[in-house]
Image 1 (tube, rainbow, N blue to C red):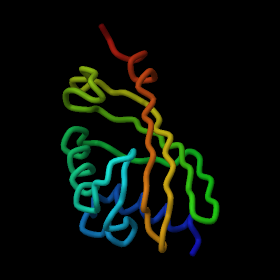
Image 2: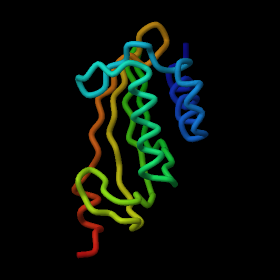
Image 3: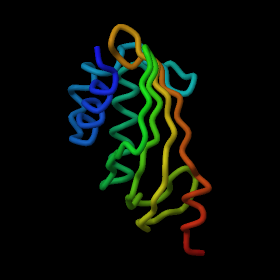
Image 4: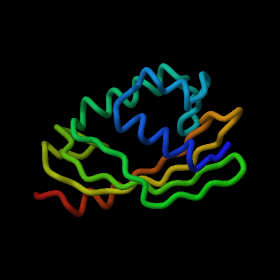
Length: 127
């Protein structure tokens, strides 16, 4: 399996908001930042993100794929409706990055470690 191609297909799926297809890319027992949330929890997390950030779009800026690990730097340019990462955004346009690692097992994402650059957002907020 080509992990780079698989990962780009996963990004296409979530950008299309085709959450019913997540099981093609994400394991039933996926772990996110050390918490076992399962596929349903992962789906709920993304649905919550779409609700809070209606124009959310994932753009891959950097991608490194190894045998069973993908590292990606994602770029976002969006308008969260209210609070995001504890910050009052209230519809202001913000740009930020997420650095994320994925461990694959049996061709699917089994574990995710994600860090969003909150300081990048804070610099853009109008007092």
